[in-house]
Length: 417
Image (cartoon, rainbow, N blue to C red; front, side, top):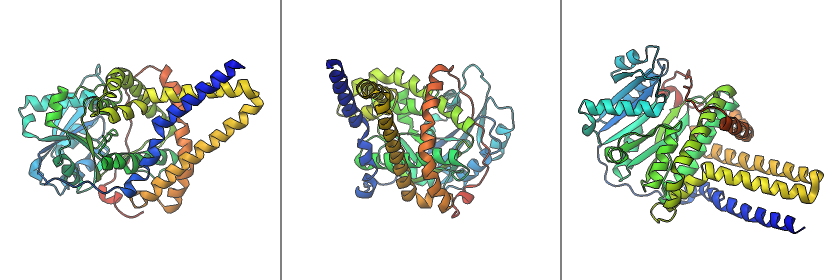
């Protein structure tokens, strides 16, 4: 009996800790409606180098390069670089034909976006051009930029941020429940998490693509030295541990392509889980030390809890609670409680998806029926993370490219659904 009481007490403590780690995000859902926008500093026209790592992307890359050329930012202040990374198609030729400065890279021993970006920056430095630029913008070949993207992101850069990112939207939201689930998560990440962090003066988060950094920050990093399977999460962790605030440009819209098959999405998210584990182990100690500094405490807290350590706390808390239920109520008494928990989690995720959909209604390229319908499948998409995470933990770590096929112009994305 005493053991059950101890187990119950531990379960309650873990539940409180878990709530403290994650329930603050409920506040994030409503901050954008209440907070006033922060004033902008006088705008400075910074000079940008655009960095694109492309691997067999001849189908979609021309549309990104067209959207860059159609920017309303002074063209003389923007130079586009493409690294054709282990390509076997016409990616390099297509990029050169569109006016980009192209470097070809062939290295099957060091595979991944991080290595490709590092190679590209080294080539720019070797050409004596690195110091010409105030900042660098990183895009994937499947991206599309709204015409005022650089103008809007430049406002955040001019406001004193050494790293910055835009609002991530998706080209193929309406394809099916897989693409919609992934797209809806990124909309939530931009419209609620990053928008709230920016309003509160906290560090925002880079979400894979459509981000930038100053030359000064690149120098502090010693070059682009983020080579894990999730270089964006590694970059976030570096910024959190070193007190570098990432700014968010809510009006700087960038579109990208989401996986449309469960197999493709599964493979992508396996890599994310494996990369997240790599980063969490590599930066765990530095982030934990950062909790003791006023300058880095909140950023380190979020980075820790949203990574491996937060996930482990959740799994451990669930395990202890399930054990207490089984020992005190038996299997027959435990199953209804677990079923109720499942219903509650589904309802919570549905509510987040619905709120995000309503907030971003005009930004979503889908019919009204699709927008509402995919709110119901959004929790199912998130549930697939459980088996994906389990598989990722036992599989060999490796980077594999995701094929991109949605070749459309930015003009097509901006037409009403």
